[in-house]
Length: 124
View (cartoon, rainbow, N blue to C red):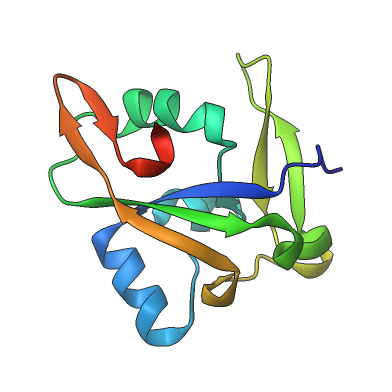
């Protein structure tokens, strides 16, 4: 199921982003591996995801803009417990838990944190 968004977004650690640039893809972090999919967000969900899960994260974070069509039918929108909106999850072809490909990333920018709010040019 697609909600027609052109882009989805990945909040990425500096380590994950470096791995992706070196190897050409990434299986994400421990949460992604244990869930069996790569966690993504729609643009309007990024700030709340950052606030809920990354406020105390000490290392650099990057926001990756991903061209949704590049993910094909491996991109699935699912409602998360306690949420009224569907979040994009990347499973890969046939829900095989495939790595997120670097060639789907159209923009990447380091996030900055000031006064409890994250920012970058994509979040304006």
